[in-house]
Amino acid sequence: MPVYGIDWTYILLVLPAVIFSLWASASVNSTFQKYAKQRPLCGMTGAEAARRVLDANGLQHIRIEHIAGELTDHYDPSANVIRLSDAVYDNASTAAIGVAAHEAGHAIQHAVGYAPIKIRTAIVPLTNIGSKLSMPLILAGLLLTAVSGLGDLGFMLAMAGVICFSLCVVFQLVTLPTEFNASNRALAAIKDCGLLNREELAGSRKVLRAAAMTYVAALATAIMQLLRLIIIVGGRRRD
Image (cartoon, rainbow, N blue to C red; front, top):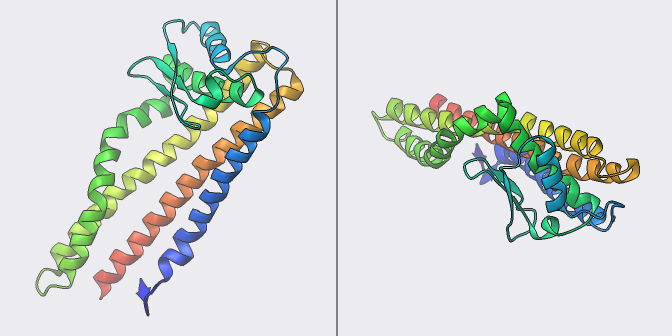
């Protein structure tokens, strides 16, 4: 709650998580840049490595495309395509191979029916709706609590907004095991396909670990934001 113009709930809860997120983002960028310079003996680019992993798992129907941007890599299950960024698609490095294999790991998850990624895909529409409605509902509710006779209605609206925001937390919670599992599948596939030697594989592992921390940070930030909203709404109810 704001006290003398200072929102202590943000400073004590959310700000540390935001700082953690900034550190995680900087860490993944620096780690990727470091191992983007490590050339593998196999000479494969990220696109070629992803193709090898997909084919080894019977996923020849999944296409690999280039997409502009920095670390914009992702797997699109609706189109059966892996999109690899500028620094991954045609780059022959341990970093590129690690990231490309990670996206192939997501394709494998869909193919084998990995439960967390099925749940994540199913709740995306609800999460999108919740993220759009949460803050308007909370703000409207808090305003109504200050109006005589409308306090209960305002509290109910604000709590509805909190519940909507909690869907974002659930999404981040399900995303965490999905990303860790994709990285584990990627490292196992790289080893099984003989793409990298032990030293090179260590580079890919460090890149994927750094990337995983960004998802940990995103979950921590979402949880802290949810706690802050609960405290603010609950405090207005007591007032």
